[in-house]
Image (cartoon, rainbow, N blue to C red; front, top):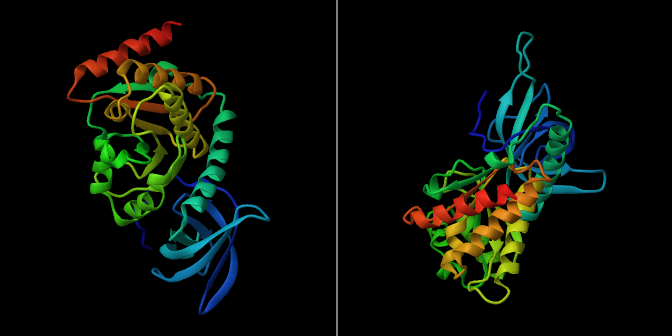
Length: 297
């Protein structure tokens, strides 16, 4: 038995999978699925390292396709408590298809949470103001500003690209500068940050008369993507908005107010971290003040 480090939660769901290579062409069904791969039950798993062309049928009429590698096997034995089968890791999966899988899994996870009568969430605890280093956030996904001119203006975007693997840099070069205000895409991340995914969101590189409306659209799209993908926690770099000229009071009121209204109706994300500039305690105090005002309303 062998296994690679898993970065994504698995969701139990039975979906048809077709695997093809030079010596095999057949169908299986999944036991569970994640954004990064699938586990298939079979008494005759393939060999670790085997490659296939994979088609995963999300519905009868919709499927995603990519290359896949066998990264985990469990052989059948009478006394084993493990299901016999194999885990396959998606490779060269498009961002669009990864989002389709994430939304399907998110729908299942939200449905499971909604029927859990013992699940209670305290809104005050779900909105967290932090002055720590965002590169050490415990959040599952982090929002990173993108759009025309952003990489030249925003320190976090520069830091992420500087310390990222080839996949993120390639995707940013393809999509980052072309994102319209509020448009968001989910990108796998490997690098200095502690979280496995980032949400690239289109943001103006300057503040103008439409600044507050633009900021609200940015926040809503990030929150919606985090909800659709059922991420448990989201990190928002509030300090990044200040670097493109947004006034601190507007950032605090709109970010916190939009998140508060969103979380009152949604289960995911369960927690949102707003990161202030950890070299400037005044930003942190402004956010804390606005948060208290919101919860007094």
